Image (cartoon, rainbow, N blue to C red; front, side):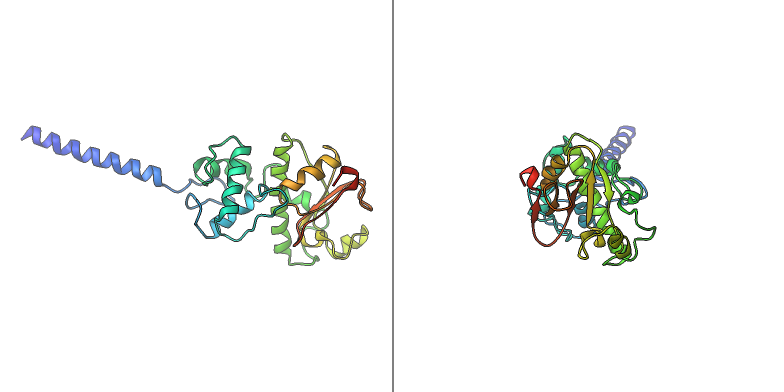
Length: 244
């Protein structure tokens, strides 16, 4: 009777251990910070806002000259961008947003969802509330967030060097004060002017790989002292002094 009791106890312990292993391997990502926690690991074929949140953070890893759609659909372009992200950071390259990939993103993001090396204050030296532009304040601020994640990818590709932003979002009043184009992407929070080091040409050339399909740099009128990167509906690159 005593032996039978021991066998039953051992079997129950084994069952409990197996259940614990299954629960551990299928558990959702743990809470990372005050920004955003993914409720599940992601892979091709999935859809949802959690996929869109991933796309925002890997938006700097599209194909050359491309822009990653933030559509909440984990299709081939998103899978390829995840692979580039994984390769850039020395992770296992499988195209899936599992514990390694999401863990790295958690490491890279601050509590307000901005990437570690950029801030909203850098992207808005115009006013405190993101108002007065061509889109709502919330849209302008969101667009600026995506720009920062693209710049974070670019920064890492250049050897984790500092990238300096002289101008980001502008209201119509701020844009007019600096003589900006009345259709400037700055009015949407979609643009950043880059200055300093690395060289303006290095910045212009590298930005082609990080989701910026509007690039204006040295040799283009009024752009010899900065490189302008932005997102628009069509591709337009012009920095003649840099061979672009």
